[in-house]
Length: 311
Length: 291
Image 1 (cartoon, rainbow over the protein chains, first blue to last red):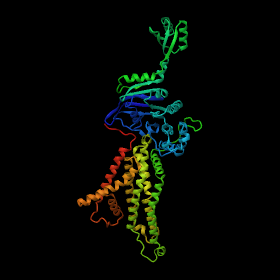
Image 2: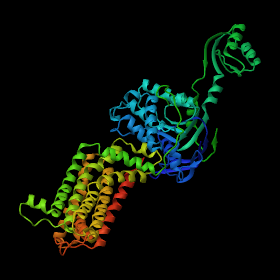
Image 3: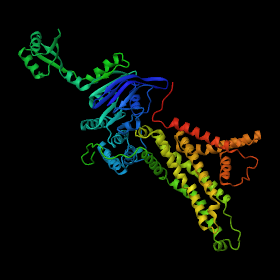
Image 4: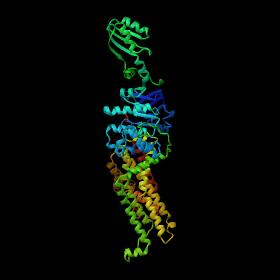
């Protein structure tokens, strides 16, 4: 879907993206990185707002320099900051954007109503946007991005400034869009939780370079089998039995046991073995914070310049 | 998407052509401009002189009405190039007032709410955006300048007992060319200044200031240096000389202070260039901070 080939972008005399090379093919890609890492610049470059000084970026196989209009035709973009025409009401604004994206007037009007109902602004669609709350303003940006039926939806900090309820609603909507499957998502955020809940792949940027590109689902799957226990009793025999079942097991003098289970083993089997070996399991912990680990590892490592990254 | 099912539905219907999107921008801009009652009030005020000129033409070509209304005063107004020059001048200055009100409405709303990133993320270029707004402003100004002027010209041709049109084709050309030149300049100037200043009222003031402040400075320069070249900063004088020349009317006001056509054209081109520079700097999806 998105190909980066030695992409280098300079803004205001500073290199913001430094030789990004990679292929993003996932259905929902999270763009993570600390402030100033180049997330928004990458999005703006994909939209054709910034021209690369070196290298190229391709979306749907089209060059962002030469085929801007065709790329934008297939993209729905929700910017990070406030961006709307406050003097218009919700329907008129979304209809206007849909018509700009190429929908005939009547179709655009119909889709504007549908998009507003879909994101939950149906009841306030005839109110002027300037009177909307912050959460509503975020949702109207999402509605206009969806109205023309894009192939790729780019969301830049979609939960920016939202209260917990509004954030949950936004995350649910994004999850529904992802589940529906006809739109691919590129979500930029500095909130790990947002990316964790909505994406299946993550691209981590650091100082304008790719620090990591990982499949979150795979990481989750591998971490699902990692267990840490606190036990009372002699663990030597217990560990031996676990190894016999195909687990990788390490025991520590204070009663801690760490194990990686094969897919064929369930936690229930571990309880059974513990019972048979007179081991009391006081605490069992399954590793969950996979994205945080990925992110922290990426931040510690030195990002490579121009190295091909692919999932 | 479906209103009742609340489910997403991809769009599979036809899409319009890329150039037609500029028309969409122009249509929405026109709707925005004319949604204000003040715009309509200014439009009505701009049409009033046209009505006066229309009545004058009617009286000039209708002896019975002239006898009834002017009560024995048989010397009616003469309908010639000077008459239409007065019409062109009055309409063009009213167009400036309309520009000062309408132009900021077209651009400032987009800038105030930072709508450019969303607008330009659609398949429309920066040039397309400016062109759409330009078309909207140009059309709005057309209905108070060359359109009524040419309609009056046609009416005079229709009511005149003499073969008037054929002998005065230059007047029609002058009305069209003079108006188009002026409203094109006003449109680009209005859009540039509106994009430069976010606040509508300040932008309105800037548009008037851009026309009249340099004129004052030019007058001071001319008076101190005893030269006619200060008039190059005086847009009203420059344009009135240009309109008179296009329509073939001798300029009796500025005798000895006539500006060469090339100098006038150069100044107008320079103004356009500066406006394009401002638009290029301001109409962007993203601002880049240097340093």
